[in-house]
Image 1: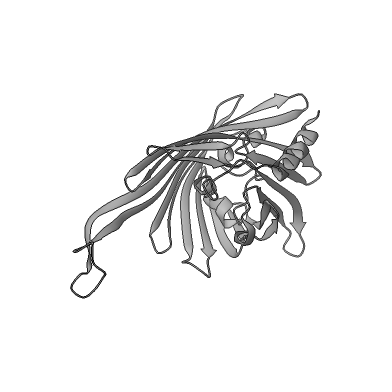
Image 2: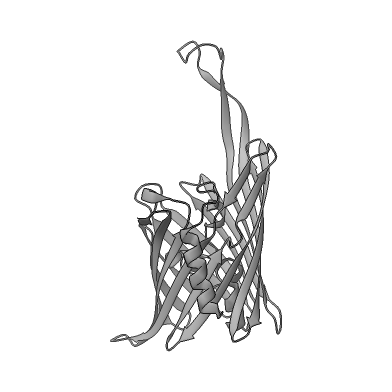
Length: 315
């Protein structure tokens, strides 16, 4: 069976998956990696310019020659949620990609009633008795290997979760590949392909079902301005019955869509635009010799707008 048939078979398998998965348990693995990719509408499975290959598509390491490093910081929802990543691609003949992320919400107040046996009133008001922090740490490690005429990316991932007074550990893996065509590239990622397990100290066991990310890009010279542009179009396919929480629901399957456009307005400057499910994104990349400054903005009409910034280095 060739690789194309394997991924088709995986998609068919998703139609019949019923593993009693915990809905949204895998959201800590869906935050994205890299400011450039966020500005493109959370596009990355077909992006050869990403530093977060371990997160997006480890098979793309086969196409990357230089070493890359990136540090990202984000404060979202008026600074309530902090999201930081450190990403690296390194090695000589066989590249390795590492992505380390932290998602944190700090100083969450816990309250009690002065009289827990009575209702809330002017004389029985809740008071803060302590503060707690929620933190999720995830490490992705990606490599690319030949499988006959195809390139396969393998990304094991481990997570540590600390939510209030509970701790948990998670482990899983993603499988990815890509196909090149004239002026473009198709990337595929089967995330959590043997299900990802999250085990809590209190005995709770959460399961993240497999899903498929598919994304294609196409490069062209933009008329009039005579500059290179790249269009991206991608979809995420989940198998956990998200229903109205996703853009399109088909029984147990649901889909979200992403689009992006990168325009090289100058050898040192890229302008970035995107659409991430329901929100518009934009940003830029500024290159200064071997250094990169990346900025991304997401316009969120329901919650607060998001800003992300990163510093990168290539050699």
